[in-house]
Image (tube, rainbow, N blue to C red; front, side, top):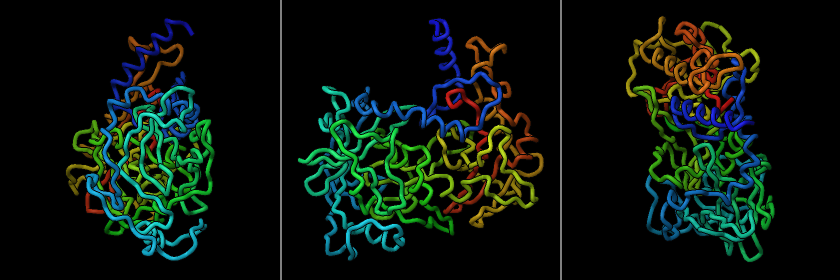
Length: 460
């Protein structure tokens, strides 16, 4: 590729990224010239597969991590998750308090037992506030290069670390390790359930000096299958735990470890873990973006898969008018539609947007989720919010011009020319692209079908 084309792509990237919010999550660097775009679900899934090989090298390449990471603090045991980390030691549950039974994995564990073991683990782990360790020689991927890691706990004579690397504006955890006098081990299957996912290549590859350990597990990294957040708003964890969508979700991300100011609302505490909502701002006035997930005792955040959140699977909503709306606007895309936040950035997969106010007269009942939650859509002709959301999504769409098409000074095209499918308010409303339902505390949550997200070339 010529130097002139490199320069062109660089200028286009700068201009396009300036027109949309900063992207959180994996991003694929491939550029497609075709005007028709596959919808964001497929693009995001393929992007993680494309960056997997980068993760192998990423642990040793934490540029600038020293400035961004929190100052090391003395280890503290944290048997409960709170919005502000505790700074005083808390008693470690004694083995006598743990439920009886052999410390072995099981295919099925009822939620009452899971909760009891969260409170009194049988597996011996003691967690602490994550502390940056400048170099852990056993975790080096490149000879002679430092291997920074976070010390997150201990188990017997072993120290427990996570390693992370920055890509696409987020910090991905690519390894959970125990290091003891016998060496380093990648804890590949951290859950006590045999049906839950294990770390797999290409996203989780042990360093040369470590081995893959499929025997060690933790009671405190085993989740209940269902959690009621209030008023029957129940989230599940089975989809998340058994088939982490991105491949990086097994251990969560380290964004809040690196940036302690990242806002996180605790929705329900479950001993050393909690169901939380990650909070981010929106470019659409009056909206705040929420991502439902699990705060782990590692200090990481595991985003709940859409299938585990009420209303998270758009294609599963049953509409009162009997019209089937499960097909993507892109005829080449046969994957089921999912729900995303209408005020959220592409590729980040935020769960919902929360409206600062709700005018009941602007909405009408239109459908029901599989769990029985009533779904509302804008009234006939739309409302101010539906028009604002659609206009922002179209305006934020931007990609490189296809061959033979004149772009702007950077070679980019925008809006409908970039492939955004809902170019009128009527089309947006007919597709029930925007909907509302009540959350666990009576708040109004807004969801949007995933193919209505703005198109950006980084996710092509």
